[in-house]
Image (cartoon, rainbow, N blue to C red; front, side, top):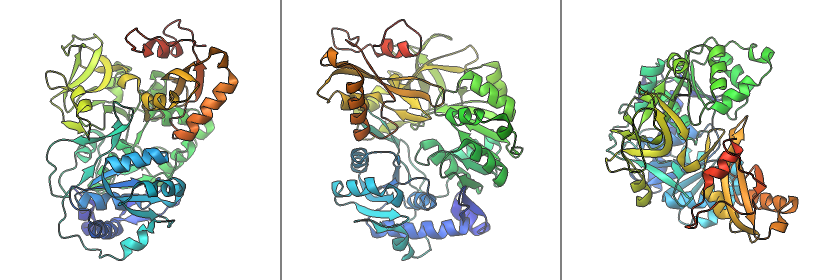
Length: 513
C-alpha cells in the first residue's frame, strides 16, 4: 500500500484536494513530485536515516514533501506553524535536520531562525525570502523517476519532555525497508471504519499533528482521497462533507463543540448522508457533547485513545460508548494495566497510572531519563495518564500527563510556561494549570506568587501577559492570570499543583486570589 502503486493503476485519481481552493493533486502528480523531491533531498546529502524538518501550514506542497521523505528513508519532523523562533531553532537542532523547509506564510519566523541553524539547507514553499530558496523551483530541476536507493522513512514527531522542552518520539523496531510495506493505520482504518479505495477523508486539523498526519497518509496509502482543510471552520466543515461526499474523518472534541454551537438551521442545511464512520481523539470529550454528536450523526461516531509513542491503542464505538459513557475504550494492540505508584497492578475500578503491556516500544530522542520514566519494573509503558478500568476492561481516564493541558486538541506542557514566567523579576513562584473552557476544552491559567504582594493587580497582570505572548507561541500563552500570596508547596519544594488545578475545576474550596 503506497501512493506509487495507485499512481500506476489510477494516475488521474485525486490523491488530495485542498478544500477551500479546490486545488487537486492526482496520484500521478504526487508520484512525480515526490520523486523529484526525493532526488532533491539526496542532492543535499540527506541519506537514509538522516532527518528533515518541515515548518508549514496546511499547504498543497506538504504531502509531496512527506511522501518524498518517506520514500527516501528519512526521519521527518513536522513543526507546529505556531511556534516561536526559539522553539523552531531548538527542534531543528535537536532532530539534527539536514534540510529545513518553511513556507512563505511563516516567513517572519523562518527568517529569524535562519541564522540560528547554520549548515542546514533552507527552502521555502509558496515563494522565497532571504536565504530560503524556492522549493518548487529546486524540485522542478530533478527527474520524476524514483531514486535508486528507495527505502522507507518515518515520522519523528515531538512530545513534551521532562525539562519542558519537547522531545522527539522514536518508535522502536525495524522499519520494513520496502516503501510499500503494509501501513498499520490503513489496516486499522479498513478493519474498524470500513476504509477502501473509495474512501474520502476530511482532514480538518493542522497536518503537523500526529493524528491528521498519520491518518491522512494512511488514506493515500490505501488509494483513497484526502480533503485537506486549509483552516477549520465549523460550517465549512459541514459544507465540505456535502460538497466532496466525505465518507470518513478524524476530529477533536473542540470541532464537535463548535459545530454543535451552530444555529439549528445551519446544522440541518447540509447533506451529511455520505458519512459512514468518523472518529475522534486527542482530548477528553465531554459526555453531553458526545451524546449530542451521536444523536445528530447517528451511531457512526467512534473514539480511540493512543499517543504519538504508539505503545497502545484503545477503541470504542458508539454502541459500546452509550453503554459505558465516558470510556475511551478497550485495548486493541496491547493490554491495559492500571498500576499503583510502585508499579503493582490494581483491581477494576481502582484509580492509578495507565500502562500498556505488550504494545509497541519507543524512546524519547536524546532523553534516556524520560524514556526510563515511561517504564515500570514489568517493562510496561505509560504515557503518564491516570485512570481506571471496569470489570469489562473499558478504560476511563481521570487525569493526564502530569497536568498536561489539552486545549483544542493541542498538548501544552505547563513547565515550559512556568520556566519562562519564573524568570520575570517580579515573579517569586508560578504554577501553570488547565482550567475548563467551554469551547477549547481547557485554557492555560498562570497562578503567580509575586515578589511583592502589593504588586498583585491589573498592572502586573498586563505586564506578565505581554511578556508571555512575546516569548511563547500563541497557543501556550496564558488566557488567564491570577495571583496567590503563597503557592502550596511542601517543605521539600514539591508543588501541590493538584490543589491549584482543582480550585478551577470546582473540586476543592481552595481560593485563588
